[in-house]
Length: 268
Image (cartoon, rainbow, N blue to C red; front, side, top):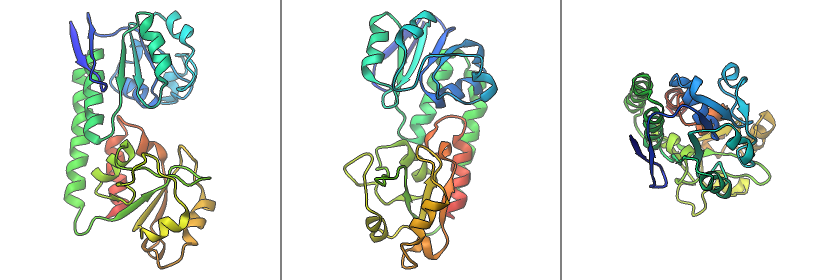
């Protein structure tokens, strides 16, 4: 009997490792494949795009926000993996009311990501395969901490446009930036996803500006808008406005070790 506590504090019990999994979280779908559990995955969302060749043959159950519940049920899963923010509560509740075991994740930090990997490995019987993945993340953390020196840079990470939006400390993106030894300039904002005018960004004097390729796909056009703030802004003056791979910031799982190393290289 498996007994594991999910990120909502609920105890999930399974007779044995899951054999028919529907995953509603793109980054966890990628994690499942990285752990060697591909054959145990029977359904994924339309946004589960990695690994490309692996997910192509899996049944699609809709988008992360509009799951086709009947389709999920038709796949006869013994486990559904969901996320407290990416998926809708009422749809998860419908699955549970139908008797489906649902494991809900909600990582907000690097340690939360590590817990997710360990939990998913336990649920799928892939603990041995998880060990090198966890070790690679630990090695990346150690490298970053050794590299970081002096004052940690003040970082603005923009996640949306019209209006411009960023993140506070209650988010996984902030957790990755913090672990890479950056200081999120909106960490203390009361909103998880603060909206801000560009002059507010200028007032906070970021040393580094990150423009991810998702969820909004920032391009050189937006980079030029931030460069127009002027050389009184350290990030502009020092040429430290970077368009970065969005999945490195927001996908938890096997990408984390590369995320820490690449962000650290931008910060120091």
